[in-house]
Length: 561
Image (cartoon, rainbow, N blue to C red):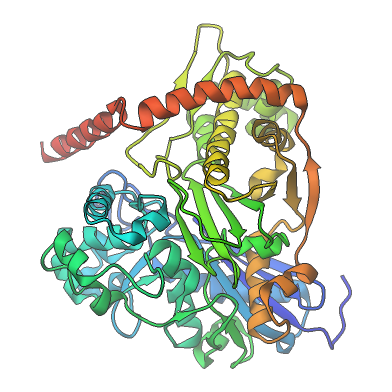
């Protein structure tokens, strides 16, 4: 792609679950010139602490190494600039986004506790990734107490906060490793920690603080509330969390000399306030207007939408003023497992002959299974599934829940199950949509970003199940492009994010439209899904929670033996 020496560029860096991606974007039109990916050397630590330390982790833990995030700056950014073929002096800003809620315990200068020799073997010293769900007991207590005290902020989160969020994870750290908690000076979102590394300045971003840090109307939960959770936890906000918050698209600081050396970029260029991968994608799809529900579909799915007014939506991850776009109320919901569920099935439950057939044809097993099931009539497989392999984020907010597959017979085949799993995630999204619309948040269009949009059959299923037009983002790098858009605003190239989004972002409007007959057939299957959803998820039968507890007890007993 041709470019001029007068062109200006920004870099968006998307920190995902397993890797970080840098993307070079032209400010004038959003054209993408170069990209590079760095895989995290430590990946996700969910069974053992590190490769060098085979210390077993308890169930539901998920940790990462903060040094892996810096490695992305040192490796992916220079390679992306080189691939773009531009002079680094043409870059005017950097923006970043992160999976959330991902928390880093640090000293006052930003040093992670896991990088101290004395704490290297302590699991709580490491980064707690978004899908660390071991703080569910703490989340349950926070929710119960909030309802007992009728705390007004709990309604902004649909009545429940998640085990994934800042307060639950912090309370777990406090109660399970008090020495580490006391040694920690700050409890920092990874989205803000990486900005700290880039600029030398710590600032909290409005998105993470509002959705994951229970910051509403400028206030976190009170000292009195925290002391009611644990008498010695009252100082948490003042001591570990309190800090000024920066709006989205604002200038968080300037690139430091050290970070300039890592990245090869000019010292002093603009660094935008941190952000969350899902929320930053809305402008990349030019979908900041109310009614456009943006689905970032990958290992999990996050759903974000703007509205002009505040509504209380049961089971949502939060309603935050300016949480997606300044001047609008941003709403978030999510499904903790989507692509992860499909991958689990292919990796652990598909017979070898399917894999062999896919290899012989030069396609993936996912593609083969999709091909085999796509022409079935709705309901032909006789199955229904609940999409809770990684718990339920919305609308039940319960990570003690687990997956369920109903209707199997001796004639059931792998492609039948695969289709049922695809459909189950669409049913989960429809459940979220109905919670929004019944509470006053209008949804008139689905906008999909992320790797799963490549599965055209899956996209059509979502359009049919939800009975809504489905648009797809133009860019294949939605979060990275969204971060680049915010960088352009922070650098002063555009007055605000929606204006930049109209020029630099884009979507293919109504690429998929619902089929009337299939939509009607899916209404019947969705009714069955809802019956199971409420039976297992709303307290009618708590067998899933009991099984999770039995598993934890059995693992603990075996390790003690």
